[in-house]
Image (cartoon, rainbow, N blue to C red; front, side, top):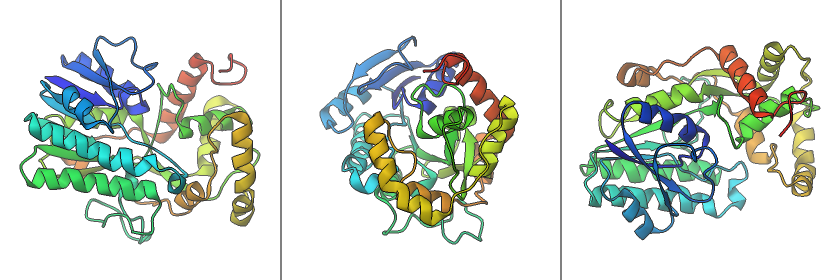
Length: 331
């Protein structure tokens, strides 16, 4: 198949695209700004912007399938006006182009944030309601983008949605915010840990499920891709076990971290880095669901998440080779 892929230079995309090429597919990749993770691929690269409906239409034309991975990810989304534009309007442009050009399959990659995390004491699966109207803008934008896809599927578009939890693993060229946090834990740059935790899933398992969704999974269905829940303290301990280094285990009080958020913002501006701790990020950790079910994806897509500790070890090994870890040539 000729497959149009958005977000190919993101973490999932840099793992997925080589997998698709290995399976004999031909790829057309939408490039917005960066192409560092995909420059070596034997694929057509097309400059464009999801917010440009005409550019998206030209990008999709002539393709058999579309894999829509691109999104505006933010942990301070209420202050980012691009979040709803990219995640809702951009998705609508992809859907309209897919309908206009009669693509045989649309695979849309969403997020666990599209679901309401409450109640926290009941298993979370695909029957859970969409995120609340009071949720952060990112969460609402992912739910709204999914609604665009599902409406089109109800009208006959052959589309499925995959919603992973917090993705991490090797080939994180960015790195992502989670990848940066893992490197910082290894490098001793984190003095105190936030409370709470999240469900973490290996990027390779997510990419495999997306590749399978090209031909598996019923149109109009949404699939959760979860790994396993770990507190941030457990994540730090896993980094320590994999690296043989002592990592921070002290957990800071919530009130202290919320009081320090303005300081984190100033520090981020001075260093040119995105802050890892915001009010939104802290709330997400405190409300991280401990029992997210992926039975449906296991059954229909053959999804099979690997053990958490092995993923942490593989992530650090890749980061070591990439020069992201202290003592191995730091990026």
